[in-house]
Image (tube, rainbow, N blue to C red; front, top):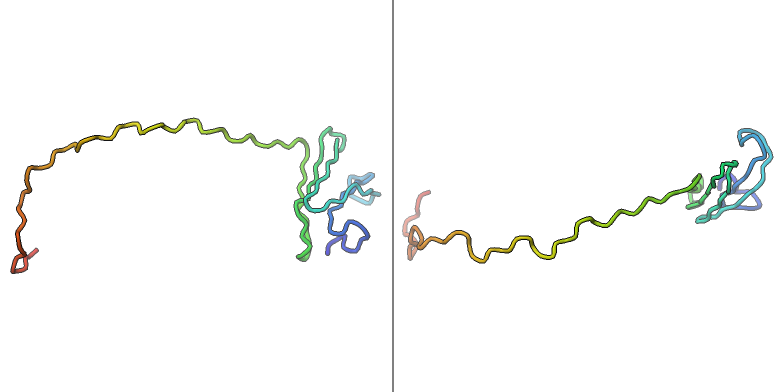
Length: 127
C-alpha cells in the first residue's frame, strides 16, 4: 500500500533522499540517505550548511488502512524542553491558625418559652 509498495527495499518504511540539485522542485538525480521504521529517527548534521541539525523521527507507520500513512516529526535546530514547574511557594500550615472555642459563645435560655402538652389534643388545630 502506498508509493513504495512495489519496491525491492524499504517496504513499510519512511525513506530519506538527498537531491543533487534543484532543491527538489524539479527533475534531479537523488541518493538514498536513510530508511526509517516506526520509532526510529535520523539526524542530518549541518543541514544545508546552517550549522544546525535536522532531525527526522518516525512516530508511527500505519499500513492497515487505505491509504497507509506515516506520522513523521521533523525538527530543525536545537529543541529545547520547557523547564519544569517550580515547587509550590507556600508550605502547608502545621496546625489550624485559630484555636477552637472551648465553650458556646451564647448562653442557652433558662427554660423554654412554652411548655409542651403532656398528651395530644382531641380536636385538630387550625393552621
